[in-house]
Length: 136
Length: 389
Image (cartoon, rainbow over all chains, first blue to last red; front, side, top):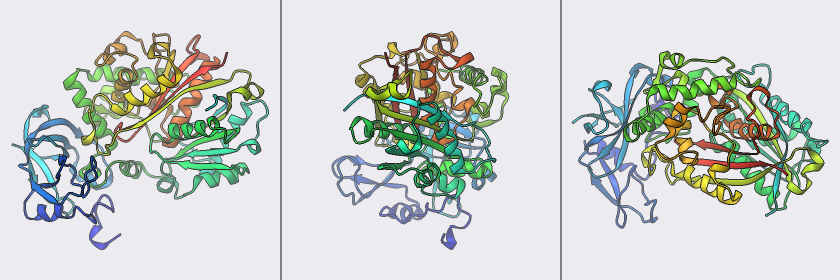
């Protein structure tokens, strides 16, 4: 395991990947994904379109706004997440139509409904560039 | 393709098994399965499939199929470890089915095994989180119960189900498991037990979730034409279906509440068996979480979409009901040693169709169905079994 991964929940999350620009863009405060020239936006970002195999070279900045599609509050976790318990985890449906899973902060779980407006907030997690949802 | 039959099944005691090694656990179930036949021995086995998800993580031991060959003293000409996470067992049975059906083997042994209690439970949960997409889900705290909790939140929104109705599924499975001598938990519970247990991922509490378990299960297959030589009550495998969605993350599933992979795996199995859901006398399904069993009623076609909660309220899925589900106690009560689960489902339905299940027997059952899933319900294996005439 690389030194900079110490303290991470999993050893392979760092982007040794063709979609490394996703994290570079996060560091520039941009939430982006790849677009297939034939099939449209992909999530998670992929270097080849799973629908047609085409290489995707274009990065599109997403608005980051949307609504809750599915939600839960997590009360048990592997050790790395213990300090965050309980945390809210949602699947957000972004305005562009894609579904994104992430933790949600700055909200009471009891107040959240399917359809509650939310937005992406770019925020480091375990020292890595990452993202969460917050109320819109 | 030639017809295939089951002539031997065996299970170990499930639960915490710190009295045996991984190899010894496999031998226990395998030897029970051989004793269940009329005279088959390990040396007769031509094809060996070992269903195991994570022996490297839980016991530090890789290559469990070769380990099995040494412990049983066998030299199979077709062999493989089958790793499909929680559906390893179902997938292994399907592979063995094709080994016999194709005419390439005259006998096949499937051993499913997982020894999970060696590690502390937080580490076990971390291991199970490796089954999800590390970068896009696990890194965000997506534990397996959370994925099914997200599914539950959608089901509640689209069709409506209460936590009490989900709890009834756990109560039923504990009641059934209390009559299963190998079950990990043989204690009956109440709706309050479930509702008052600690929250794991809302709306799922501890008692909505299957446990961490040690255990093994084994099944022996032969060509159906030879089956009576080895067992007085052969059980034919008349349908086998499998389907995987092109989705790894739960956010890429076509629908969280209608599992496309299950609908298709079931369709393929029913079509091979030339039967319909109405012909099923019982089902052993993958109740890793209560919400999973509910959706499985619907996507296996045992009731219409959205009617799962009524099936629970009416008692239709109880032993003695219209379509008993998980008479073994299911994953919830019997336990969930991941690689063994799908193999044990085949063993339970086999014993039910032979009429050997004592106090948890589904009276007069001749045809049964099994369903085993992995991931966030993105991959399913379905088998249909029938007592040979």
